[in-house]
Image 1 (cartoon, one colour):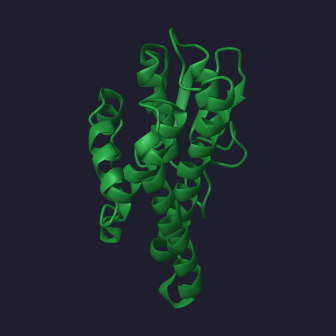
Image 2 (spheres, rainbow, N blue to C red):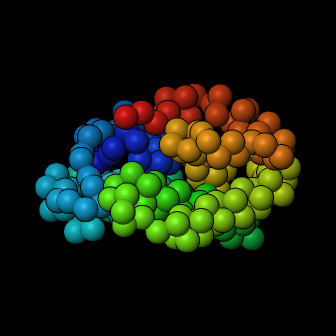
Image 3 (cartoon, rainbow, N blue to C red):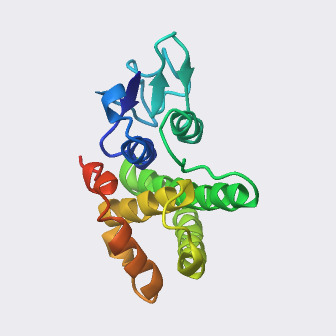
Length: 201
């Protein structure tokens, strides 16, 4: 299998972290691929018409995207208990994955607005609206972490989202007023899978 990846992408990090947790890294070739919301992505678009990473190229020519689909596919290949539980716990894990991914969606839109859009065209109300979503997601995470399972796809997604805030938005100081989340993240980010996939670039 071949994973099209960006070292700064939190969604690609989620896939790689799951692959580490499931003992699959030896079965995946990682290929760095350039993408941009305003430009062409010639390494990616032939495989994913949306021009986004991650995309997983299977040996039979099938291509999987986005990160949620890839994570569930890879989870089924690993040995032992997976990160996608069954029964009622599944819906809780998937909802927490959606919370982490939604936080990332708002963070990426904020970054695009602040970094890529020409300064004269930036929209303060848009920026404020996305930051409000980030704040609301962080407050929900603070309420959830005391009862969160030690490891599932929801925990991985939330950890990758918090790691992205550290990487791109240190000024948000998301730990302030959220001691449960700060303590949980400090412990979870020490996992080998998280240390091996820390964002860069």
